[in-house]
Length: 231
Image (cartoon, rainbow, N blue to C red; front, side):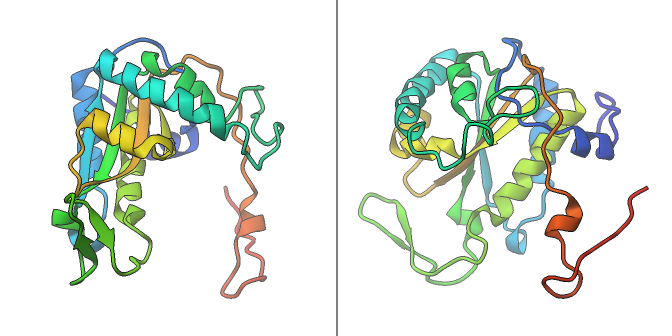
């Protein structure tokens, strides 16, 4: 990291929280530039580096996105499988994307991450081209297109955290995929995969709820507990 940041990697990892409400305060260009560069340093399948980043800071574009997402959440809120308790953290705040959508106009930057097949295709015949220029998968990709992009997204969020910038990883733009693609001018052959909200937190972030490592880890074979001590 540059001299702009002095946070340790451990502190960045253990302090990373999903932030949904941000201050209406711009992120310096130097910080945005560094977190994007950190995203490009991720590993990728076959070193294809298939990512493309659309950095949304324009108020008019954010307003157009918000309009679509408010409409989408009016439906999705009725279909959740988790209980209200499961969707509330220790500080009493909601952990759904609803809060992020309701406050979207204050989010300083939204990074939409796309997969570019011009660099991402690994095997012959993985896709066929449709009449509108879009692509359709013809074979299953192990791990999916996100196998490279999600590593890039995590790099981006950790780098942002090191600068005191909060983040929210989300895929809820897919609720209005066609509309968001049109707003952002994404070409037909480019796949929109995820988005990261970035900004300075304007909400109380409670202690994270995490399943203990020993409850989800297995040694050599399924069902054999892992009991590593952590100092």
